[in-house]
Length: 491
Image 1 (tube, rainbow, N blue to C red):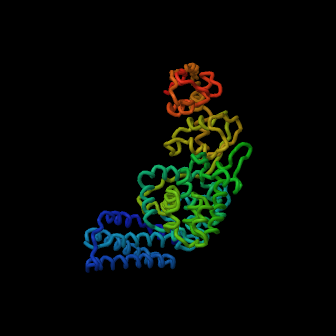
Image 2 (tube, rainbow, N blue to C red):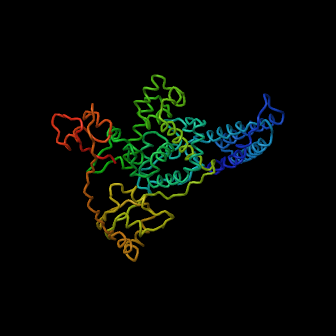
Image 3 (cartoon, rainbow, N blue to C red):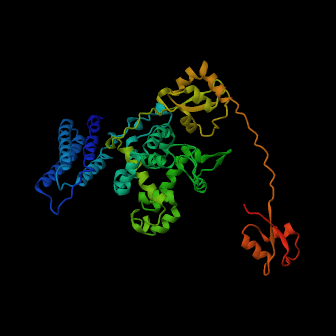
């Protein structure tokens, strides 16, 4: 499309940088804005209207006028936002609100075939049928942003919890977010078509997977949830996930994505397309969410009648998923750069026996994967034990770039020999010494007037009536004053 170059220029990262200067500069505003503040607000309104005009000109095909209007509007917005921090009484939140509005304008605001996703790594929209082996995936960009025809960005409330979750993803959870993105790119050709068939946005799939497992196919939680999308066993069974020749299909990325999409569509219908309630039900249980919501499906997830009755885990889960989805759509606008990943699928046929662990060693850090290929090989071959050597002729799923690497490094030469030698290393087994025999320690107790076996045991807190009876050969629990009893010694 001829509009693509203009659309690609509609980036808001420079505005985000300018707005970042405002976060710590909020001044105490009076009851009525001053003239300088009103002037800044006027510039803000003009810039916002100019941006909208640029979009309209772009859609109409007037590329030159669109570019001029866009440049003028963004420069005006940057200048006004920079001045706000130094102008007493100026409210930075006004500028953040416009920034949020422009991001939402950009999402899904163009006709079919145009670049709906200019802030997202182009590889996300590059699944070509001839290269991936998957069926042709029309309207790739649109499915990134639409949920049943609705713009995903309009369903995400940019409130306090979501903003806090954005900060978490961009700071201490940033490494997990980046790992999740890389893992997802290699699983995308299996998982994303399941969402597309269900008319669900790809960004939502990424948000759930980033929060649930980070893209680790074999993840298992303490509660027993398993797989990249963390299904409980009973829920998985309800949506067709179960045991297949000893393999738990919750670990199958494609089957898990299909089941997840079916679950979300079921709950979206129950909650009248209320996305926050649906995501909350996925984490906290649909039964509990239905009881809390009742017949009022328009209620906000953050309504105290709902929010205050949920676990802290679910209260954190919903904004975390939505924040990860938002970053998937707008990485550049939050100073986030996802790595470019060639996730095209490929396969190799083993020409010598090898386990996934051995292949990881001989593949090394090739093709741009500094952390090695172990996680990716496991994710793409979830049915295989990574420590068990597979015979010659076994077909393995690998990223397309690894096909040539395998042929050059893992068939002949020193690397497969080294990998096999390391894998075959025998670790000595140390036999644990037999347990020492338990020596029963005893103490003596002289029966006093009024004593009974029960009172003696209760007062000493370290034995039972039966144990004392057996140690002393007592019958009928009869005791005599002055009688000496053997009692166990408490440690």
